[in-house]
Length: 300
Image 1 (cartoon, rainbow, N blue to C red):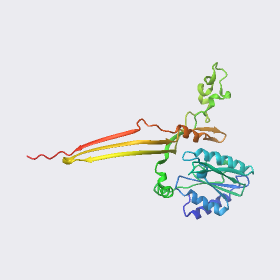
Image 2: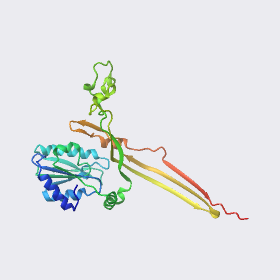
Image 3: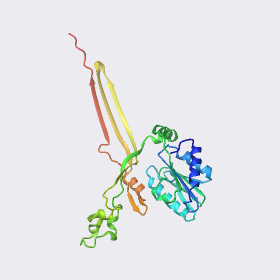
Image 4: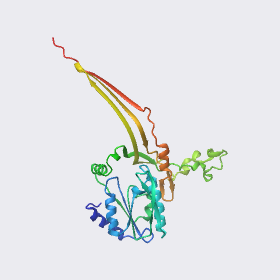
């Protein structure tokens, strides 16, 4: 673990990466990951300045608050092209317009720096020369986030805990002919091992479900609160409160699939969050009432 000023840590990172063989074709790839507000952008900019590298910001690749899978998809396609000696490209997301608006071309070069949440995507591991994890205290991260994004952050919850099932059968496996059990005289998905013997289709053979706790969930909600309190004489008071849910959208269950490199988020994760993430509470209105009476003291 290294501590110090961003410039000192950046110099250490460059020395470490320079001592290793090229991993991105003839170039080197440095990824800077860590939680929000930890200093990834600052360190990434320092490394890029020392090496003359093109700097990619993870926020530019992400399709809104829940678009973590687009970071993985775009980075994986980009580094594959660069590793083959060809120019790659990525789309830039406009957070004000709520859509991708522009494409950046990245030619092969001696250095490439990627900073942002998700830059340590497992699928990138074969191409990464040095991976840096940056972290600071939660209080400092929150202060930085509020100073940077202000009130725009208030309706958003981040790092919501969830569970990723790393060894579940891939979605759609029941529809693939190669997964059918030829000895079973059934029809449709009933004859698939996804239904008959799911353990035969798990990525990690010999194990059942493997759950990994993750802090990648998110939620955006808007509520309107009406409150009325009235005090009367003789210690009598009434109170009424109504919390009205106007909007609530949250991340859905992680959708993963497997390949030769292990597991990864499916390309349709952001679309699933958009279509299925609307939370409809059991009660749009949550009403509470109160009554208080300060009993008088009785004296003989």
